[in-house]
Length: 122
Image 1 (spheres, rainbow, N blue to C red):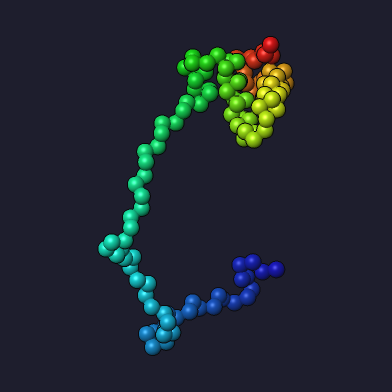
Image 2 (image 1 turned 90 degrees about the horizontal axis):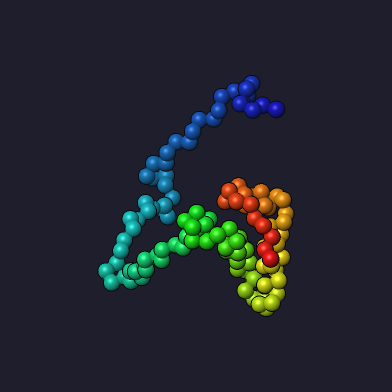
């Protein structure tokens, strides 16, 4: 299998540019972008609301303790479950919060992020 045309001769020459007489009739140079007077402009953009601080930033600033941080993270992880009944959501949140505190791998991730070891919520 030849890769670099080794042993096959030289590459074919590049095609010659077409002259004006050889160009097809439909080929025209593209037109420049034009803005017509009275054309509607885009709606003005509203300024973005200041982004809320992440749970980790709030923990580092002392706004929440470790339990509050974990509750915020569980809330963040379950926000997509809004369609469920509130009792179901609370059960899922409680199980998730307990799992974060008792699973050694998850507890280690929390320790690395926060320098604190989570305890099971009572």
